[in-house]
Length: 423
Image 1: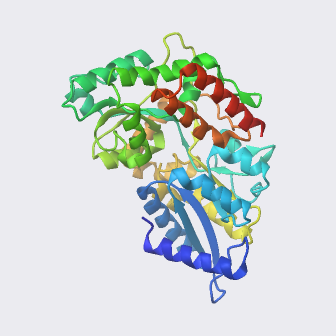
Image 2: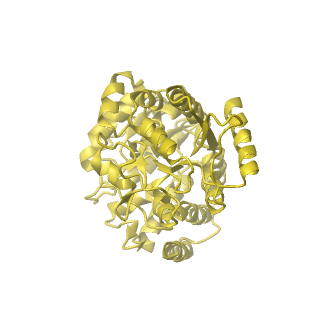
Image 3: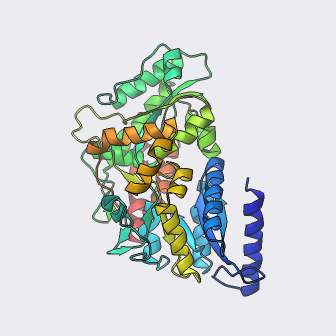
């Protein structure tokens, strides 16, 4: 639920827009303050953190009033696309890497080159916000797609944490089955999801790229092998069935099996560790994802959690740039956000807050350091990349629920995905 402040500011912004009928974010009644609209998605805990950061920025910049436009993840891009199409884009927008090329290609984003101080940012990560040589986005922080494990749940079922440097997908399925069987019937060994990052890692272990020269580089055989992992989990009761997993996924992160102590394993981004541990009330462990027995590449990759961008249509460009600069360069902002949007890529900010990081964030930092040499470079998806999650989810649900055969689903998925990339 939105806080009273955010709700009130949204209402004020809506009235201002109705009055001026257009794409800017007009001032308040007295004209003394600039209203800066800022869109982002996430959980309730992220909303609270973000409002604290907004308050800190407003205190340092009393002539700027930041209006937080918050939504859950499933509805975020639909809402943002509608606003951008109507020339009503927020001044500062949070965009995931999959949508970066698409929004930059539409001319919706401002080139931030020279507008935000990037001197202390990791140059390799910063490059992930560049499209066609222009810096359209600034990464919020970095993370990796990893396995979260509840050690207490695993041991209660008479099992042990796996060696994540050597475990395989078959061992993951087998261990999940044993944990479910060793429990009281209320706990599953694992939950699964259809995140494109998971498929990217799985495909890389088979020597394939998700994107290859503007097309999908994954073969039908790899898709079918990937789906077979879900089928094995369901058939062995290592995970809930497709219908129950659909309900869990729709309920959001805080109702996941890991967050509610009803599951031992779950795949999530490393920056989500803190929120998941808080929801569960238990210590959680980050692990590498399993590998195929003959894989020479672990497939895991470093990725910005998301990016800060500014609207090319903003009437308050200078203020938008100032807010982004604060978010990425100010130690106070870093000390509030911690690893919620990935660990800071600003070396000075990270050094300033390192000792203040709570245990979950300390673990995230240690984990990232331990796997850094194994990670592949960041890849910016081509236009149409933002549609991949929905396409992948629809066909994967059809396969796991038995509504479509893997052969048919693989053929149609690749056709639809490549059509989306072709525009």
